[in-house]
Amino acid sequence: MPELLEVKDLKTQFFTRDGVVKAVDGVSFQLAAGETLGIVGESGCGKSVTALSLMRLIPQPPGKIVAGSIVFDGQDILKMDDDDVRAIRGNNIAMIFQDPMTSLNPVLTISRQIAEALELHLKMDRAEAKKRTIELLELVNIPSAKKRADDYPHQFSGGMRQRVMIAMALSCNPKLILADEPTTALDVTIQAQILDLLKNLAREFRTAFILITHDLGVVAGMTQRIHVMYGGQIVEKADTGELFANPKMPYTWGLLRSIPRLDEARKAKLLPIEGLPPDLIAPPPGCRFEPRCQYRHEICSQQVPELKHIPNSKPDHEARCFGTQEGGWLVNTDWRHDVGSLEQLEAIKAEIADLPLEAKRAEASGDTPPPPSV
Ligand SMILES: Nc1ncnc2c1ncn2[C@@H]1O[C@H](COP(=O)(O)OP(=O)(O)OP(=O)(O)O)[C@@H](O)[C@H]1O
Ligand code: SF4
Ligand SMILES: [Mg+2]
Image (cartoon, rainbow, N blue to C red; front, top):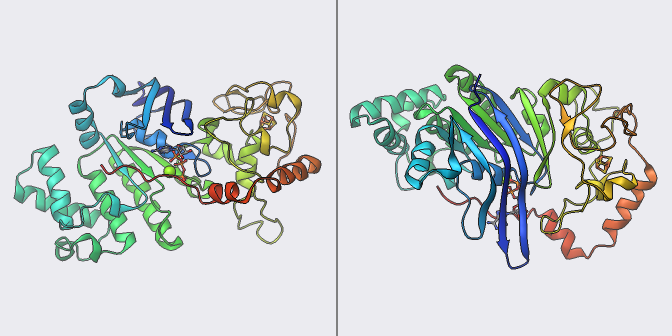
């Protein structure tokens, strides 16, 4: 089956006063029609920049897609003129952001915003568009949709606004929905409802979707495949079940150890990943996770590990780690019981303790600029 989306060696950079931020550094992946993919990683690892690159929404300057190709439905988005990209954005790829208020227009009623898209992209007349708008609002479970359609965005709760965003995303029958942390701002119960809705509608409409999140727990029941990102690169790719049962990269082990598990809540202590994410202006020369990895060996700081197939795993399972690759020292490591070298762990803690306080604060605040308005 031809792929719906094929991203090859994508590189997106920001040219800042301090240097070139290599935000996305050689990312490749594919997605078939109707397939669901989770992209997971810590703050600042390049998830949103990947998504914005797919839509060609990188603010330029300071940003630029400097290499790679993004073939969507047979056409390279990076070679299209602006009008064609705009048409793709409206009709074929829809995006749902973390904060719906950045995408909703505060001075237009909810129904006008959805109807406008329907009139523009699907050439519906006003009455038709209004009718379809109500249907869409009912589909995303807005109570009393007919009455509430004429409200303004500020009259809706955060969860309802996110439902409206899903309705808008679905309105033009897109082939792909990109959801970037769609539920992070919502409380846990509402989060689960919205994710459920998104999953069911994507299945019903046979829409492919990419769910971006920093929380591995969120993608567990949502997607067929997961790609883990670290420092602007993909460091592990696997089927969702395989990734949870048989992860092959110490960074993924760290992510898994830091999510609460119901079955182990009383026994296992949550272990945060010590250390700081890499500086994307001057990333570590070898494995990007090396400064924080308690399993590291000498080779890890000298050579760059490739993303490749791992022994004792499914054929399409790949990871970027010398330790778990053929002949590596972690091939038989049971990550659930072996947390690596405690000496290394102490060394990592000591390295961060030496950093000036401001550096730690800036990193902890996840100083990431907001996405541009669409
Ligand atoms: N407009 C910009 N100018 C300079 N640097 C930028 C810009 N936008 C993003 N970056 C940098 O690119 C890198 C990747 O950022 P990105 O927003 O993709 O992270 P993320 O994985 O989405 O994180 P989060 O989970 O916090 O949303 C970060 O180092 C960020 O500071
Ligand atoms: S390559 Fe080395 S430093 Fe990187 S994750 Fe594997 S063991 Fe750790
Ligand atoms: Mg982001």
